[in-house]
Length: 85
Image (cartoon, rainbow, N blue to C red):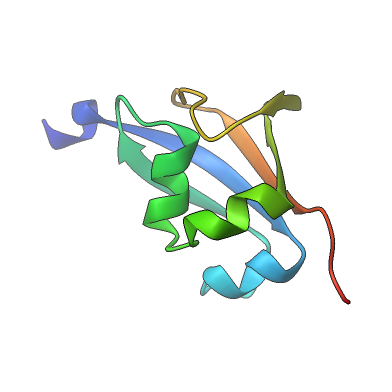
């Protein structure tokens, strides 16, 4: 079954990154491959890698980075560190 090769995570996006999701909300559920890392989430959302240095990444409320492994049920928060100029 194809679903066994995927995990489901919940992503909450705060700040200017909301433009990368088409939902009319700042939270969504996503299916990713079973060996996915945070960087794979960025790729799926089409967030450029150059944006990562301006984002605080939390996985289940704990600080994380782009190489952090994900598992089904994880809650990922992407928070913009600085907006404006």
